[in-house]
Length: 368
Image (cartoon, rainbow, N blue to C red; front, side):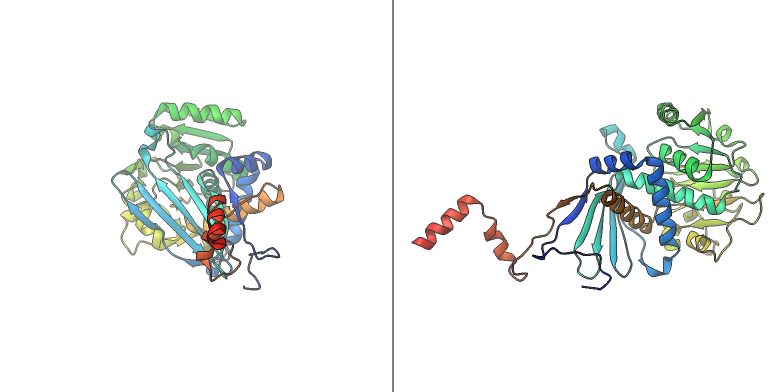
């Protein structure tokens, strides 16, 4: 076991895996505060992105179908391996299911032991909003106070709260083709003391805003934003274009200013930049966060963040939720792997757990 390994054994070398259910994560968030959790995840993301080169990275592995996608998202540093299982099925609401569902794992690199299994449906919403705000702090005008939210589904409240908490955004312009989604968002924003204003189309919602966030769900090559809608000094936060064949920005919008992304090999396949030639210039956001590249050069410049979601953000979010659950003494454990008296005798584990009837039969056989 590595000296830096986070794995801890008890005296009998029994290993328990920490577990965070959806219900327990909701309890942790409510006790800590949603705004505080978004800010905390943002801080962990910045910390991890600044040490970008410490990580073994790859694009996510995706299995696409006609109705959605199922993905695995792995990443690791020298001590901890993480992955997320996540889906994207836009029509799931018709079955009373979330569009996005996820769980994740942290494991010990030195031994392979799973240290944590956690829900990531709620936590992904937090980490996506936190990542958007982290990028916007680096790219948007510091005096930004208004944001258009195009797409008012499950992610929208988290985006609004993140931008309010971390950037001081006060005014939210809202549009969704589903009026019920906007009704829901308006009610939820009012419940947390934020003001939203409904608009009848995306063009009207965008007008005059400092930041524009697109977070739509349909798996299609859409053009939610066109060049004539973009004003000088805007920051574009493109969140919904996150898989092949799914875009939100007209290609010419990407030509209006510098484009930033998470992990370029993945973003060129999945992001809005999938529309662009292979030599189209982009900058990975970690370079801005690490201080090696400047984000914005002037108040009039348009900046574009082409977000698709990357495994390192999940690593950061899993670390944060693990640490907060421990701080609040709200951690549970599960027996995910067998604890063996003799690690070479896996077969013997079955005999140990036959139950009372099996033990009686074994005793009778021995007596005979």
